[in-house]
Figure 1 (cartoon, rainbow, N blue to C red):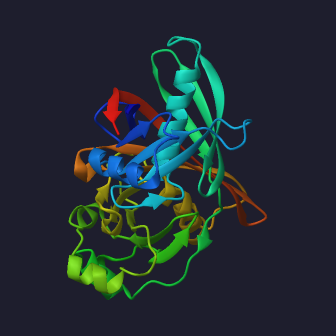
Figure 2 (cartoon, one colour; figure 1 turned 90 degrees about the vertical axis):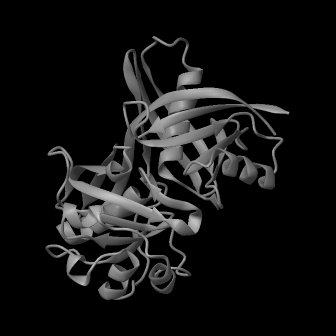
Length: 303
């Protein structure tokens, strides 16, 4: 049976940048095993499957798969799927407007605000389904450095030190001293398995204050070999949890704070993730993740 699919580049306004995403529509007849097989066939960081919502007031139910496993939540699939569904529901390709797309994901309800403007890449932004929370301790810096092909002196900058946070998906957050050092990082498999495997992590988010563009607040790389992703070009679920790291170490005052995270540059897939943090009475009260998405391909896959 054939199923219609679309491929989008997410967290970018240009084709062949950002993080590619496959979206399979009307996938209600597919079982979990078939979905996983299709995700392996696309072999992208994630593939989403759009199903009828359980609550008719919502837009769709969405299941998210990497080539190796199903995820309860992920950022670039949420942005890309929300943008696509808003475009497909628009009255015409040149019709401006705003849309609210309500997705039922395994983690819960995720609301995606979408901005459609003629001649401009679609912009989508979602509220993080969970606020960031400390998820426990990480191994010492020397073990993390070995796992990432770095030396211990390259781990940390200013008051930032390695932490573990989750906003639905737990990540190891590893501050790196410089742009040069982060460019040299890699997964050293034996040391990775010894330091990070088996801790329930979705991956390691490396970041530094130095950036390629002056408009960016942080430069990042994400490795997720345990999910079949050697390196991810843009990771919205990690960016949502990273809000907890920023608030913790940068001591954000009350108010609204916006940061741009650049990622994927070492892969030739430059991406821009827009992070918005709301702080009240000294606590993080809201996190939003946004970015652009552009359609690249569409077709039908036999399943």
